[in-house]
Length: 251
Ligand code: 13P
Image 1 (spheres, rainbow, N blue to C red):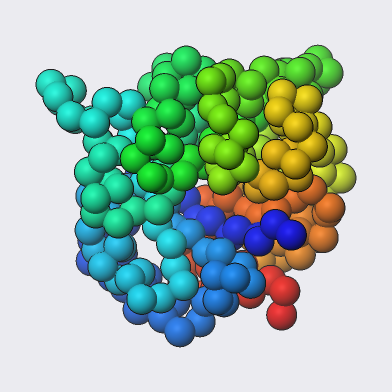
Image 2: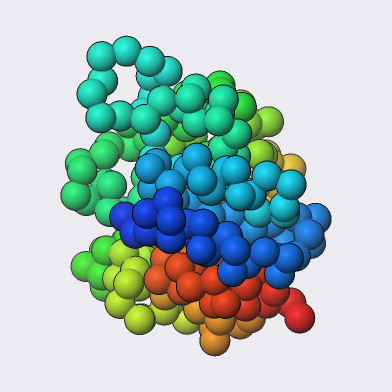
């Protein structure tokens, strides 16, 4: 049984004070982690506040990025070792905004996945196609290529613990959600790809999320799909009431 994950991605929003206000707003209202794992991915500048506030609650924490070296002369980067030492749980890697605006390659993402796992953190590996690719019928091949690239050299045990997020670029921040059937089809293809690359057990264990305009109004329908294990939510994760509603989608 895969435990569902409801993860928020705040992107470059909120300061530490606003992070504390969010924590106060969700306090006591999130499900136990064994029922639905809740995660907030916040800007690096907010992580100290987020980790302190999440400690002793079901909420888990994520960085939105990290570098693949643990330390050194890499001005402006965030160390995965430091993230681990401060008590962060997950790191989002390969988000389409990082691939698009900051030119991250599949090779970078693979190196980051390895460094994250080596430091005892878990990667949330994002993938997803553009509208042009979808219209050209390339979605499944493209997403499988991105996932395979991110996983190069990882053991089955590491893959089982990792998380993949399928986020079609055309559905991010646009209000256009992939239909639950569209999301299920691609997520099932990702799972089949992992079964082919590893084995059935690994493909059945890894959790695969859908992201792209997920909100309280559509979360139930998406979560009813067999292969969709959770959501990676941007806009609708920033308001505490909205995040609480997403996290308690089963009620
Ligand atoms: P929205 O939920 O705002 O569409 O963002 C999705 C996303 O990019 C999460 O990583």
